[in-house]
Structures are given as C-alpha cells and as structure tokens.
Image 1: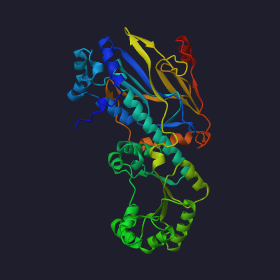
Image 2: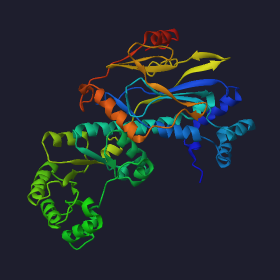
Image 3: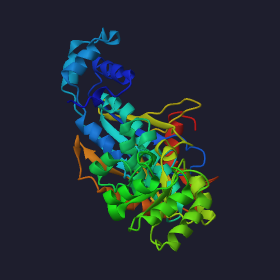
Image 4: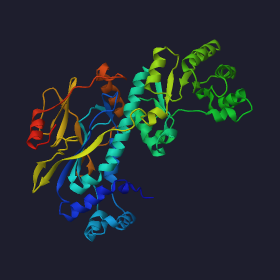
Length: 439
C-alpha cells in the first residue's frame, strides 16, 4: 500500500506550489530554515531530534495518480492549468539539506534545518518537517530532563498507550532513547530501531488468576529470571512477600501507585530479608521529572523509573514555537535575502550557520567563520541524494549524552534554568537592518 505522505500537509502548501508553477517560479531556487522562535517555560535547551524521519519523507516524496485526482477535484484548484498536474506527477525532491545532527542541544533562534531547492519543492515540505521535528525534539528534550532527574537510575519509556497516536508512540520511543532512556515498552520501536524493550505483565494478569501467588508462579514459569512482578494490584506488602515466596531468581518488582518512597523502602527490606538483594525496584505511575527528582532526593531505594504519559506527551510543554521561514530566493540567478518584517514575529534574513564555541553559540551568515567555533549545520542531502549513511542510533544517543554533559549545570536545572549564551553576528544584524526587518 502506498504511504500517502504527500498529502500529509496543509492545503496552502499545495495552492502555493500551484501558484508558483503558474507564475513561472517553479525553477527559482529558494532556501527555507526551520528554527524554534522561543523555548517553553523551564527549558533552556532543546535536544534536536527527528532528522532521519524528515529525510526519509523528503527523499520519498511523490504524488501518485489517486492523490493527484483528489487534488484536482478540490474547488480551490479549479483554475489551475493542467500542466501543473503533469508537474506534480513527476515531482521529486531534488534540493539540498543542511542540518544539525540529531542529539545536539540547540537553542531559540538557531536554525536546526535548512532546505534549498526549487521553490515548490522547498515549500511543500514545510508542514511535515515542522510536525515531525517539533514533536520528536519535544520528546527527546523531555526524556533528557527526566533522565537528568533520575541521577543515574535507569528510565524506561512507557508512553505509547497515552501518546497521541500509535505512530507518535513509535517515534516518541526513539526520541526518548536518544534523550537517554534505557529502553521502551514499545515493541515496534524495538524492532525498527534496535531499542531495548522492557515489560512483563499488567494488573490484569494478576486479576486473571484465583490468587496473587498463583499469578506470580505462572509468570515466573513463563519468564524465568527476567520476571518483574507488579506488586500493587491488591496490597504492596503482601505482593512483595508473595514475589519472594516464589523462591526463584527474578529481575525485579514494579510499584505503580501510592506512596512510592514509603513503599519502596518497605519492599526493599522484604526483598533483602528474603535474599533478593539484587532484585531491582521499578516505580511508575504518572511520573515526571519533578516527582522523580523528589524521590531521588529522599533517597528512595528505586533502581528504575517508568515514565509514560508525562514523557510521551511532553505534558508540561506540549508544543513548540517552531517556524519554517524563507530566508533567500534567487531571482535571475542572483540570490536575494528575504525576511518577515512583522513587529511581533520578525525573522532573520539570509542563509545562516550556527557556530558553537566553548560555552557559547553564534548565529551568523553561512559565509562567516569564527575562531574557536565550529559550524553545527552540515550537509546531509545534495541534489536529492543522501551525502552519507545515517549514523547509528547508538551514536546519536552517545552524542546527546556527551553534549548535554557539556552544558552548564545551571542550564540543565529543572526549574528556572539559566539561558545559554547565544549571540547574532554583526554581519547578520547589519543585513537585517539593511532589509528593514526590526529586531
């Protein structure tokens, strides 16, 4: 079955494409940049994620006959020349892409992605690129915050059942893994991306048997030393004693409700007294970074945290002010910088680069360079083809871990973090003033 991603867009992207074609502008080269206008509350950084899904979309973008027939049936296209539909039937992305590598911390006002190509090709991609990069960046950032709060204890992503779609659950699991989670409950994500998967049984398993001891024995027979017993279906203390009474090695237990600090202390004592000192305790149940940090500060003997709803939806910051702006267009073979001049939502003109130095960033023009600062945007697609094989997910995850560790601790604080130093080059500011775009 054809993956109908071509129509996963806003209508005006396609009406503009038709208009560009009819105005003779379909061959004009344009450059758009995707950035985040401002950061959500209590965020001083974002973890760039979603590039691989974005590139897969661009390089597979095509319109099949049923999709074109559907578009032709829409009244808004009634005045469009038949030649546009021929153009759309041959449509492929032939442009260039520069991007910040996945797993890189980024900040407000910095381009994460740059698309250069024929104007309709760069325009049509806007909606999908914003959607997939924004969502995955949100989840990776939320995961990084939760992992930071866990202070070395493992975090497993549990959120698919509360994600906004099953597909969001899969991509969210990947993003959470990049953000530092040790694994996911999502089997599809494990299969597609090689992420470790975790999970054994729910409350319904225990309820399905005549007694909790029977349910635990049956689970042990099934899973052996990988068993994790869920203790709070009835009574946590009795559940812990029933788990220990099975008398076989098991991986751990999970607490999913109630006073997790007090329960974890009680359960740890029961397991230790029974000789199961290596059995891990996992806590779950509407956990976020604040609740996890409080449990860690209290010294609760919890080894792993399962984060679901709050992580899969980035509940405290469920959206980003992401933008996709035209920054340059060629007219008669000559590049022309362009910017939006709105008093409330201005944009920076010109093709830009982000330069990262030790403890600061500079947003400047592509042609600039700064001693001691390295460019972050790198070419990933040239003339519609990938420049190189994508990095392994483990490499992306490692990059995220290493670069997050380089951020000042004050920038990573969960509450009222300090902003990271980002400045705009003098040449970029001069170009902005020349075009009359107020900042």
